[in-house]
Image 1 (cartoon, rainbow, N blue to C red):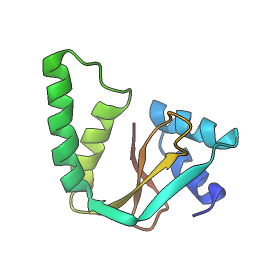
Image 2: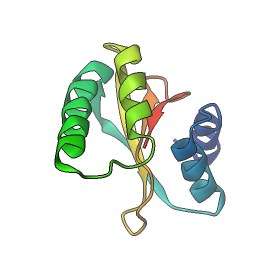
Image 3: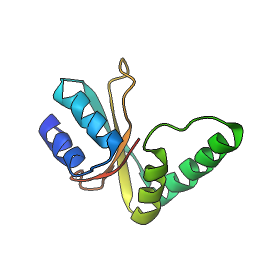
Length: 108
């Protein structure tokens, strides 16, 4: 996946985390799309909704955008998603891309 396609996918998501991720890419951040790892949005919803509840129960402040991500994952159902993130030397957003890589399903 090239930078322009990723920027296009992120620009369609108006969330705070997606805008932050887009800004990182626009300043030249390296990134990696994990095309060899996919999961259904439903599987990830189960995992992240549980983690989110544990965070709230234990007083840990969730990352911005995580609550919105959980809602979007639930809405995406069984659709396959791909993960991308900026290079490991940056602590940036993680995002989930649609199966065709053209849309940002969720970002946190």
